[in-house]
Length: 178
Image (cartoon, rainbow, N blue to C red; front, side, top):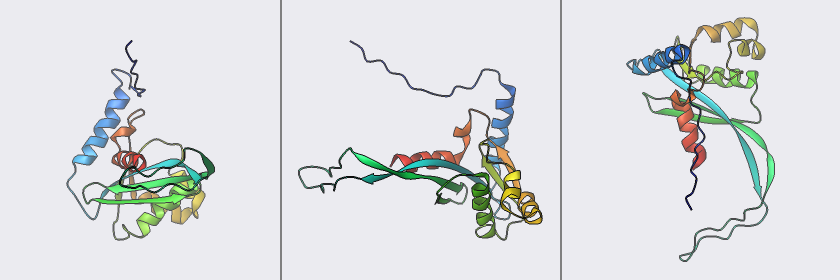
């Protein structure tokens, strides 16, 4: 009897001009030489389930690995925000209790105010999630402050079904599999 192997995957439609146009923009963005005054940063976020152990684990010995009971209690959820600057090696992950437009805007603003305070502009590669909008800054900040943040960001969106082109998504995927 043969074992059936199925891997679920998002397959972009063939001959999709919009997909190709967005993909080329992302790839051209990654080809730009490093410029510390206008860096390329990537961002992604992921919801995570917080788990609480119900029994004390049995520590590893020379004869067996650490043993953790399969039962757990749900202990809420959180969202991990990942920022990475591929050409400098920078990466930062932060956690928030939720993921709203305002949460996203505050995370981006914090990065602009700290690591990129001296940069006139940054290019940000991100997916088309509904919270990734310029309007999110207006939900989180006064209009003049929101406008100042928006003017400092050049948004480059991955194509629909092409979020795998986002380096931050790859970083998050590797981190959450550990």
